[in-house]
Image (cartoon, rainbow, N blue to C red; front, side):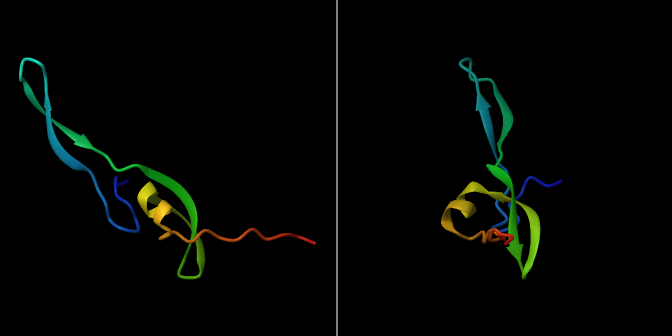
Length: 68
């Protein structure tokens, strides 16, 4: 499963880990992904989205159905 947001496509960023002795090794910063239930094309789906998409309102969550 890819480490990418299904809404904006945000994926991991790469860089260097630098120690006090200036030893350089590769590292990666992963996006903060959450599994949420959302409405996609009129269908309720479970998708992996980043928290910035959730906060900005790009994810439409299904409404709660109250049984009478």
